[in-house]
Length: 428
Image 1 (cartoon, one colour):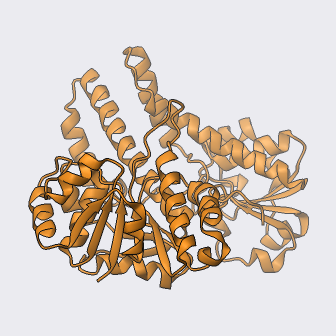
Image 2: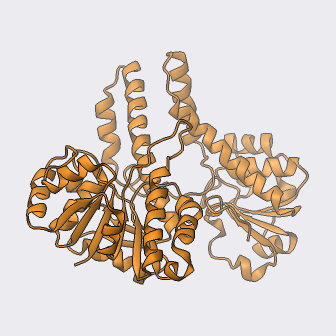
């Protein structure tokens, strides 16, 4: 059993407080709104959520949950604070962190007066960096060095949806805790002892962005389905049936496939088919902003790669992988070909290794594409990884062709792995 102060008695805070109390913890809810506090202390939820009234009424009656406007009282009687105050959008679109900042400052000030071991858990939705760069310094200043040394700071994003919040609390997809170490994370996991879900420990920065990524993905799914529905209507097809069939594919569509940050997509299918849909939408006067943006986003990945290569300051570049993916010689619309074309045009001393590419075996549109974009490819190709390492100041790993060879051990060149490093933009 943990004694917990839950700051913010809105949808997230009230549901969290009630469920924690139901599961055996002693909870103090904190809110600046005295009327809301009075309602909670009567067992009357201040928000409408299925099942909440029953749980809240029970735990208040049992004495496991009470609410107060007094921050000091809440801190003094607890060992852990869950911050669940709102972070509404400002006019600019950024999150308003004013209320969170006040809570953090209040917690720090109270613990400064009476230093002891305490855990502060961020449950409010905040963009990566706000906790570390804005809130922690506020806590540092408010608590002072002696008290601050005994305060642990974690991040525990919530995945509750209004109208199904209690079910979501009891059946989460996972429980994510951003913490300095596993021991600190365990203090948070202990709150959810009776809940069956995968426990994941990560950094506070990653934990914060996971929440935003999930919400963005949900919004993206809605927008994608709506645009496919609009396309279907213009083509006399059943959009609902189209999406039902799309979702039947759990190998590629509803799966982890293609959801790894990396380089741009290419090949003979994806770019061509996207352009066909975009063209049809334009001819049919359909407003479909999402699908054209996919092509624009893909071009941005190519430009990011070029920028990182230029910023490395290296001129002798070795590109590993030329086809659009490993184990094929298809060069059509390969982003690696586009990258090579740009680098060669900008005067880089470029050499390329791809064991799948044999110029004498290229034909048809594949050969025509190379002749158009890399007419001097024969002079750029190298026969072995060792030869490429000997040439290169910078190795650019473009596809999984790079797997199975010790590039770091063989070469002193810096390495840019396009399959991974565009999500962590550093050149090793």
